Length: 280
Image 1 (cartoon, rainbow, N blue to C red):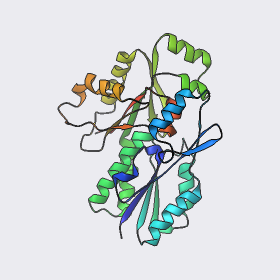
Image 2: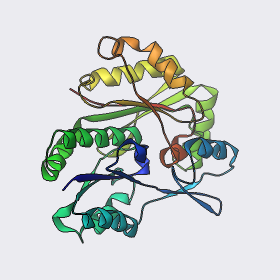
Image 3: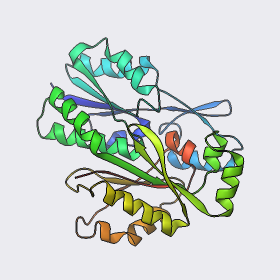
């Protein structure tokens, strides 16, 4: 019997990373056309369409029957499934997974990552580390539920325009932020999006991110960590890495970087950068 991980595409992890990984796509709708995140719509295609669209696309949670099909295939082979989902406070996907898992008893476990994109991604990476150590499913789930409380995700947005389109901020606030070059810094805390501050210019914003890393108790480099970016180019995140080298130059010689897809990119827009890590 082996342990298989199921996650959703909001984690921005590729199904090709492990044989025992299944990534179920969220649905992204532009106008009347539906796409499967990461399957029929690549990250690059999403941002090309996003910048040309006058209105925001709509993202939809994964329904229970999709989870049930994936779980069923694993259980039929005599294996166990651990499902890691996007924060239950931000999407109904966790509830869908719970509904589907009820039919499989102790063969399926569900973990609410209480996070999104690269924050969810590093929890999945940690799950695979625990599998490789030989832990059983119940032990892994217990450890994931403890460790997820140590995950921090901090992001710098380039614009408030997409939050305005989604009704999260007013047009007046978005316009003033653009005129003043104000860049919002946000985080995921207790499974929800919180505003940490509004920095004037990228340099001040980068300093604010560095402050948040130090405030969290610094990065545990023995655990998975990841940086992410939205849009068509990774130039901004590479510049951030260069400017903040003192944070990790004596700790690691490799900083993994991933692209953030449409599920989260719908709300942040292009030009955002993010850091996700486990605190010590």
